[in-house]
Image 1 (tube, one colour):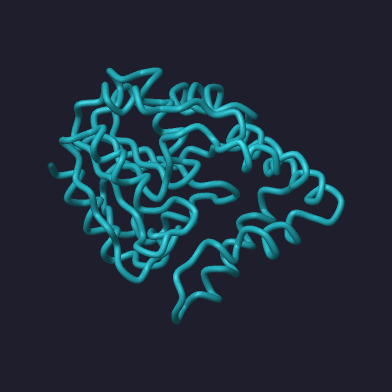
Image 2 (image 1 turned 180 degrees about the horizontal axis):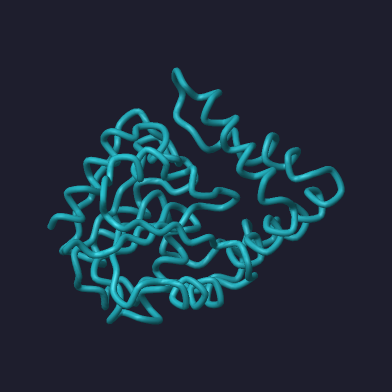
Amino acid sequence: MSLPLVLLPGMMCDGRLFAPQMAALGRRAVQVSPVTEHDSVQALAADVLAHAPPRFALAGLSMGGIVAMEVARQAPDRVDRLALLDTNPRAEAPEVQANRVPQIERARANGVETVMRDEMKPNYLAPGAGREAILDLCMDMALALGVDVFARQSIALRDRPDQQDTLRAFHGPALVLMGEHDRLCPLDRHELMHRLMPQSVLTIVPDAGHLSTLENPEKTTAALLRWLED
């Protein structure tokens, strides 16, 4: 029997981020765990583990990947395999850290939709057809989650630990995947994760940016299915 799969969405996203993959997984048990209720990566990971099966496959995109690494650090015996999509194993850079509180203040003053529209969404996607529909979905997800979730997630990202030692210690089947146009988490971050986990498969998805699951769902899903069957 196949192991259950736990999916962790990115910042200001919900399970709709993985809708194409969930549709393709058929009868496999799939659980989307939100990363919304705490303002530290450590507490978010503990919450995932509190609700996850005893042993599972784990995949996360962007912030979801950051939380997934902490899950693997806290409970390596429970994570059978790990997929890290469009993410970053390093602690947050000081210049990004410095902008977090001002960005939260702008979101509280002007609405989370303003920050998403002006500062975040333009950096998400590859150029090309279909972009507007995905951006609209991103905005819908962000508005559904709201400014308090934005604030908690921002602080969790600001204060996150470096996870390079976690990845060095992980020896299960692993996938490192990115959209070729991802500007938020570029190639060098994924090459680093691949070096830290030499057993991993590094996959670069064409015609996709930071949201590979939605921008090129066919190739992303195919890579995830190969990882699950490894």
